[in-house]
Length: 152
Image 1: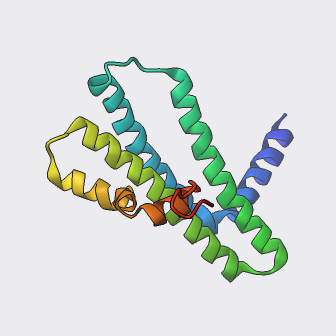
Image 2: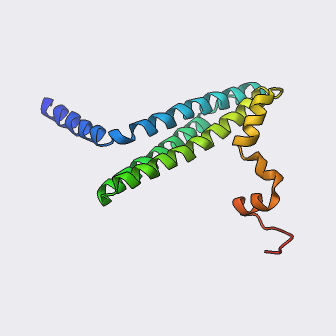
Image 3: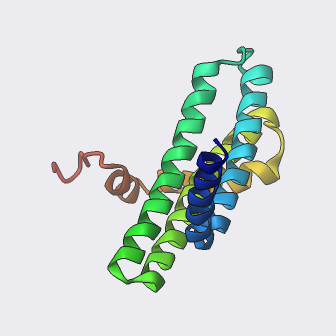
């Protein structure tokens, strides 16, 4: 039994050591996930007068797992292809993209909790891409909506 335990710990240690270069992106995603989860929970409880739903929490954890899986698999593919520098660039870019979505959602929830706070409203307006709604052509292009003026 001890031999199986030692073998298991050796394999896990080797995997953790191999994935050490993506440790910081995983930690960053977990930190912004916690903020988003906390303010989303507070928003549901105090603004929406909703209860804590396990299904919603499990979906949030599933998305965190999905985002981390994309980062880890990108790193592994880059390692196997011999493109470590490019893989780390893509990992960092993906981390910034995923983090920006988490932060935008966190700011939205904070604005629901504190509707009179202009600083958070401004940050959400900029960071949540609300400014795009003032530019209909760009908004329609990014979000794939048809433009009635051009009949596309």
